[in-house]
Length: 262
Image (cartoon, rainbow, N blue to C red):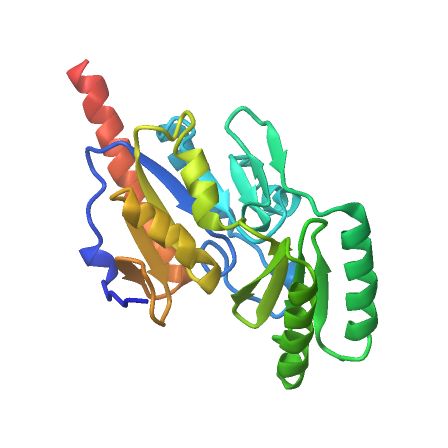
């Protein structure tokens, strides 16, 4: 992976263009917390997202490892198009839900096996998402090796599954599902089609999204440190919030200019 370092004031201006906006949530729109259920998106940020969506005629989507139901709660009152569980479930701009579900027998067997294993690892958290499982070890780093070994063993037994590493987590998910594929699908549909994609994310799970956006000659933005395929960088979530304010001002200015020219 490459590493491109850009400060907030060197990100390209988005003034005057037609853009489609894609945002990761944890570590991007919201600060990372010890437990997934402690994460929140500040009210001011949610308001900015709603306004950006309105000014972009709905061309804004959340692309996250969380299920869509959680994204709606975090972003409320915004209910945007969304790709949840890294794209295993996706809500398009018409509100239609598309899902890639695991066979019931596989999901049930995995859930039982993982629950039994996690009962032996204090501090580790198993997050069942229906079509995927997130294995968190942020609060139990001493169990990371055992958790990774179990995840690798499971994937080796089921050809339809793959691993998705992240920050202090590894996810077991359906093969062929990732954020890049989800963004590409959105970009073939209204209101995203014909626009320039912009994707902001922070984790290893976002790298395929960056690659997809780069291939479409879009703007990929990595939040935080570490090597990345993203072409631009913001240092942290506070910088993302600051950039959203600047972006909103640009979009409002462009909209006023269009009305004046009409």
